[in-house]
Length: 517
Image (cartoon, rainbow, N blue to C red):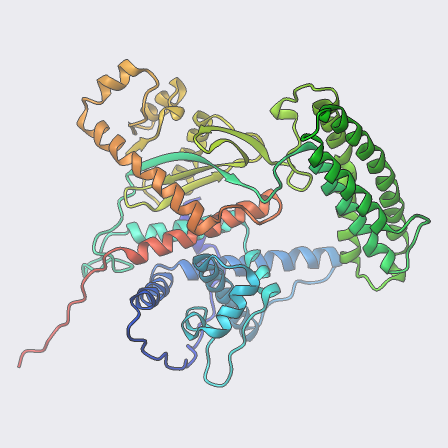
C-alpha cells in the first residue's frame, strides 16, 4: 500500500490547544548553546510542518485501538472507545514519548542522566512539550524507558518515510517547500554499505560464559529465597565465591609453566560446579512456579524470574560442550555453532579483516543513504552475517513498496554487492548500476564513464556516514536486549539522525511582503 493511502486509513486526531509556555532567557556568549537551541527549534518545526509528528500520533492511536480490540475479544466484552478528552490526553503523551526519545538520542545519555538533565533544562522541556507556567512534570527513568517501546519498528519506518516524503516534496503553487528547504532533497541516487553493530556482551571467552550463567542462576535463586521459598542447599553466595575462585585460577593459569593442564583441570571444576548450581536453580524455579501466589511478587515479576532461569538452563549445556571442545578437546568450533552470549542468542561472528577490527561480535547492519546523507533504508540482520548481494534485493524491494515515493535512479555500492543476479535486477528495474565490479578489468573500463566515476567518488562519504550514525546516534554498543528491541533502537536512531540532518540544511528564505506606500 502506498504511504499516503496507509496514512489516510489511520485514525483522525483530535485538535489540541497549545499550552502557554514560559519564556526562555537569552544566553549570550556561548555559540555551542545557540547552535543547540537553533537545532532543537528547527527540529520542532520539521516535526510539525513535515507531518512526521502527526504520523507518529496517528500510528500510536491505531496501535492503541488494536490492543484494546484484542484485549476486549479475549475478555469477551465490547471494546472501549476513547472520548475526545481521553484521546487528547493520549495524543499529548504520545507526542512527549516521541520528543523525549528524540532528545535523549541526540544527547546520547542514559535514562537516569537524561531525566536529570531534562529537569534542569528549560530548552529541552520546551522541545519535549513539558514546560508550563504553574509546574513542570518530568518523566522518570522508567517512563523514559517505556517511551522507547511506544511503537514497533515497522511503524517507525512509516514515520521516517513520512519525513523523507516531506523533504523530497517540491514547492507548491506559492513556491514554498513543505518544510521550507531551499531545495527539495534528491532521492534518486542511492548509496549502500554494511557494517557490524556491536552488542552489549562480554568478549566471548568460553569459561566466561559459564561464569555468567552461574551468576544469573544464583542471583535469580537469591530473589526466590528472599520470598521465603527455599529448597535445601548451601547459601547461594558460597557458590558464587567458588565460581569466582575458579575464574581467578583460570586467569592466572596461562602464566604458569603447565598452564594448559591447569586450565583443563579448572574447567572440569567449573563444569562440575555448573551442574550443581543448575540443579538448585531448577528446583527453585519449579517451586516458584507452583507457589508464587504466596509471595509478594506479581505474576509478571514471577514469570520474569522463571524465564530468566529457563533461558540459561536451555543454553547452558551448549556452552559447557563448547568450552569442553575448545579447552579440553583442543578442537575448533565452527562460527555457525558458537555461542557468543547466553543472553543475546542471535549474536554472530563478523569477520571484518580491518586494522584493529579483524573480528567483531554483533549483528550485521545495512545502511542506505541518498546524496545529502539521509538514511532512506536500513536492515538489522538476524543471526549470522549474510552476503551483501542478498541484502541489495531486499532493500530495493522495501524502497519500491514502502519508500518515500521516489524510485532510485542509480544504486552505488562496493564490490561486495556485485553479482550477476544484482546486475540483472538493476537492469530489469531500469536503475543505473554504479556498483563497483569485482573484476579489475571491468572496473578500469567503467571508470571511464563519467557518471559511474562520480558516483564511486561520492561513495567514499558513505563510510563517514556509517561512522557518524554508529558513534553519535546508535552508540558504540546496542544496549537493548533482544533482536526486536534492537531493531526498534536502530529505527529510532535513523529517525533522529534524519531530523538532525534536515535541520542543518539551508532553509528557504522568507520573503517579507511590504505594502505599497
